[in-house]
Length: 259
Ligand SMILES: C[S@@+](CC[C@H](N)C(=O)[O-])C[C@H]1O[C@@H](n2cnc3c(N)ncnc32)[C@H](O)[C@@H]1O
Image (cartoon, rainbow, N blue to C red):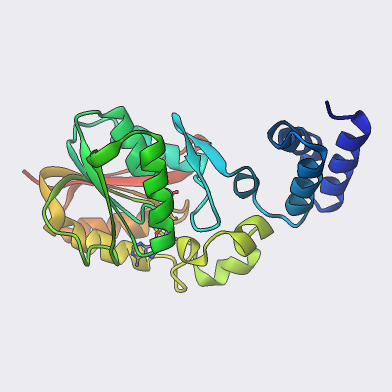
């Protein structure tokens, strides 16, 4: 059993490090640490601003728990908007570009037991984590993971293409929280340019990889809806729609391949 003293000491260290809810985080670390030594070691890492998900080794996202390491983006609640949007339509073959932990693809396949899909990422280290999550969620051979620079290694067509690409502009990186800026993979965050480069490739390549009537659904940053919607209109996809997240910010753009 943890002593109140130890818990308060942990919370004080977290407060000193600028953590906004130190009491809650200290209790969370204690519940997951068990031993006194583990608790203090975890507090020390959190005080260095290591993300909670990397310390605990997991993040709960949508309906499942995902393994998280420093090789993948910490799955965000905002991304659940994309999942909800995708599950409003029928699909049996899905492509997830920039799959990271696999949280999007595997959430969709877990919800649609007759569907199968491909998760692609440029990062081999991220793909290893996605494979582990695939095994943990018992999705098995319905998910195939492959290294690819966006569409470069992708063949065939899909009735759903989803992506949450790196969309932070290089100029915005300095302003990010230390947890994100120092510990999440840089290639998961920024395109090192204006934040829109990945959309140019993904939107431009989507028509060649969508079956007739298939859907493209991408997550966006809240200021990017007009730019991304315009790119999609240019490709000839139809029914372009912008969806908001739980906080009312533009978060997803969806469109359809004509039949
Ligand atoms: C914002 S993260 C999204 C991760 C995960 N899909 C999620 O929503 O939590 C973007 C992902 O794109 C991958 N990525 C970056 N550049 C890429 C490229 N050129 N081709 C494929 N994937 C890329 C990163 O490695 C990272 O896993």
